[in-house]
Amino acid sequence: MSISSQAAGSSRGRDWPKHLFIIAVLAVELLPLYMMWQISFKDNSGFVQNPWFPSNPLDWKWGNYAYAARLILPYVANTVFVAVSGTAITLALALLGAYFFARYKMPYSGVLWSAFMVLMLLPGIANIVPLFVLLKELSLLNTLYALIVVGVAGGQVFNIFVLRGFIEDIPKDLFEAAEMDGAGHLQQIVNIVVPMSGSIIGTLSILAFLGKWNEFLLPLIVLRDKELFTVGVGLIYLDGEYVKQWGQIMAAYVLAAIPLIAIFLFTMRLFVKGLSQGAIKG
Amino acid sequence: MALPISRAKAKREWRLYLLIVPSLIMVGVFAYFPAASAIYHSFFDWQGGENKQFIGLENFRRIGSDGVLWSSFATVGALIVFNLFKMIPSIAMAVMIHRLRSDRWQYLYRVLLVVPMIVPGLVTLFIWKFFFDPNLGLLNRILDATGLKSGLVQIDQWFDWGVFSAEAPIGWLSQPDLILPALFLWGFPWIGAVGVLIYLAGLQSIGSEIYEAAEIDGIGPIQKFFYIELPLILTQVRLSLTLLVISTLQGYGLQLLLLGDSGGPGGRGMTPGLWMYNRAFIAGEFGYACAVGMILFVFILILTLINNRFVRVDK
Image (tube, rainbow over all chains, first blue to last red; front, side, top):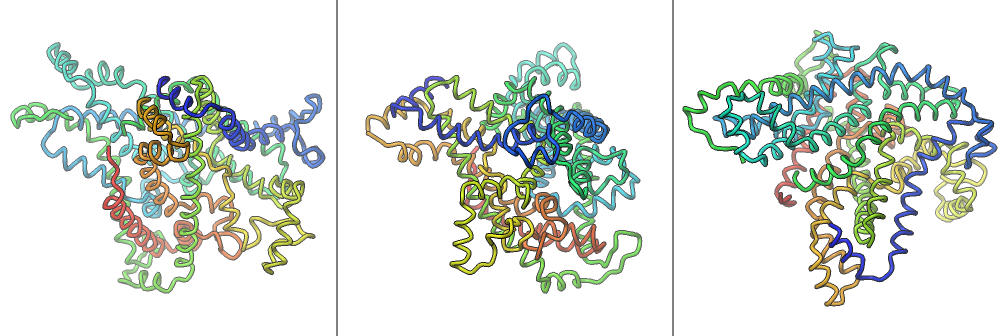
């Protein structure tokens, strides 16, 4: 990597025009983030007077955050519940499924594989109306479980697809040795597959978690009670209010992002690396 | 690849099938069943409850003369063209970062690229909605401060659009004629962090000897892009192009949140997906919504088939 990039750069002597371009683009890209942060400390009049720059830290309206926390933290808790359990179940089931496809060419596994892959072509949107009715019949409407099960089902195809490739690359000797020692398939998954494909499982988990955190269409259709709202629906509700206190709204946005910030702080390296890896494979 | 297995051994290993059962059940119940149900119900007059009435092809006949639906296809066509254009900055960004000499800067820029991902997509969307606000919004402030607005007003008078006027703030999301331009501007500068990282991964596979050879031949930076770099990320570009077209065609979340469930003023932001949502959950015409979904499905299927035929994605 280092060799090729050095060669790539050395051809044209100067790098600063590239730096300039990249920094300019990144600055615009990060502008919404900056605006969100600095407006979250202002009230409406403060924002009108001084829209661009952060206000004096002594004047920061921490009340915005107190208000936003009361409003959004219950929604954050709901979303954490849905996203964590949804991600865990999605990955667990996908791991079992991918192991099935990757280990042996079992009779009918080709047919089953097509049955999964054809769903990639099926647009989720054509399903949403019957899905709503199905959830109603299962009396899952207006529950968080609806979001979890639909998320788990929706995540199977992609995750099985990616994981299968990684499991097939694990040296077969490892499995054979484990089998000699009398390990069953579940033990092989736990002791061989999980440690050997840790980084891709991590990357897929982050992607799944992000997806669930950003989800708002399904919760919007499924959830009715305010106590059950996820962050997505909560923010939409906030957006619908008539007189908008932008400072409070921005503070709520910041709070809605905090769990993601925490995750990225811990997994940035893994994410930047794992994604590139997965891209080459998949 | 998975190992071949003899019939006798497969019989002994029957327990393996148990591993696929949970996924199969989930997919069966929450993907296959709704899909079948959508096909079935597209032939019914159905409000979502117990009562339904078989009406044959009536829903599809209605689709044929549904002006809103067909103009929404025109809108989504425009959005697809916009989105294709919006792929360019990500590619340019990846190439720029890749050509940097210093690994440390490369890494720093990658991290900075990922930083906006900490903000939930929905929040980015709402912040943009706020940018579009006529009175408080950032966009109008920038246009005012830089004097670009008076330029727009001049052009407006020239062509007699009647969209921009010197007295009133620009209503990006309230003027029917500005809906599409606003949807185009949305998300500027259109950098997708995941996309850039994936392109970078592709670029990294270029060996240094290729660059050295190119250098000896005296190839310029633009030729370098078209002859060396683009071919190597073409797989990734094609793949994201395909996903982009399909997701734009189905998409309605953006329009729903920015413009509301009837596609904004004049319905200019109406997409087929949003129309389906509107028919089902606003009008309660579930059967008709299923039929619209079928039409969408057929469109997407045709696109996918064309794509598989002509745009080869080599693994």
